[in-house]
Length: 484
Ligand code: BG6
Image (cartoon, rainbow, N blue to C red; front, side):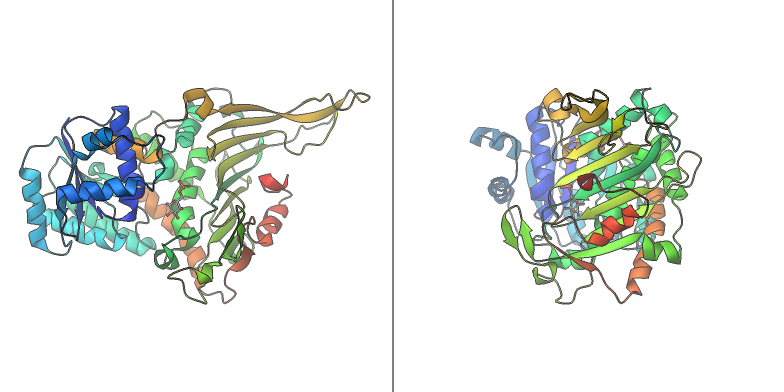
């Protein structure tokens, strides 16, 4: 199948860090359909040859399972072309049109790897140049807008130019193998589904912890913050995957209908819950992985009194028959004690204890997203440590490491999602109504913070965030996984 993939923002960070390595992996694995062209678009005056060289030098800086040989890279690079464009100039879209018209592609993918402020202009200009053909698919990166109104404005423009089936809103967490395995665990096996409800589950915790700071993205992050960057999208999508009802089939809309219901069922915020159940933090200087790192306010592009949060912890509930009363805790932050993304499902304790046991880590299912990708089932078993008291139980765990089971060079998130766009599979992409519902839910938090002079709580880089996050979860009688 001949495809043309146009990368707006073709020389930007996302392209060389994530998209090109993912396309290269797909090429190496033989899954990238033959006869494709990858057309970088940018302001610089680059020949195709210069663009290939630019990508080659950048490849040295990215993580790849195995470095390409000169010959292998050259074969991949033959797919790359470059078109210089000023995205506000109509004539430049005509030039892009001419490049596309050099041949007939079955599918043309327009990938917006630019600042979201440009999405509407690009869509309108594509339409004006007649480039919104039925073969076209458009990929929108997050964040799509900075609140409900701006998100709607973008979606309204996109809707005037493309049908919903042509629009692929990316949330790369949905492309992670562990998230697809979560769907497989829940809807491909009968074992857990009867337990997956309020009668058996005490609480659920979603953690997305990063060691990295804001890197060179300080200026971007200042206008974004952790709530918009991670919670509105990635965390809520994970919560949907955990909380949704089984879809009637595996079609994109069946899955997205169920996720939408979860978002609609999230407990509305009140003045009380906004004050008690949402904690924001900001890192100060500290030590991460043995290195001293500066505080957020000393990062490049960050204001010296910045109120931007680099950490959020919150408690919510899904108000429906399956989940009423079960707390869902979400936590994410930069410059934390480790790079660790996981979901913990804590089951209720036994109704009556006949053994001596400290429950601690037992009775839980852990879905590891990264750095490891797998499942751990924590149980209690007859330990051997205590020879005199035969009935003292000890925690043990069943451990399924997907890297070991399926090999470590598995399909990465962007690789999976790019192939899905080229093939036209929408299952792992977010529909506009889901996105709007997620904005509707986070907006009261943004408004509450804007009116609260207290600002984020400081935490030292290299820790698990402000202690208020532990105090919040402790009010329900629980603790975060690393405190158990
Ligand atoms: C992106 C955020 O969406 O996700 C980044 O914009 C963040 O700030 C990144 O670092 C985390 O992704 P991953 O896959 O490394 O957990």
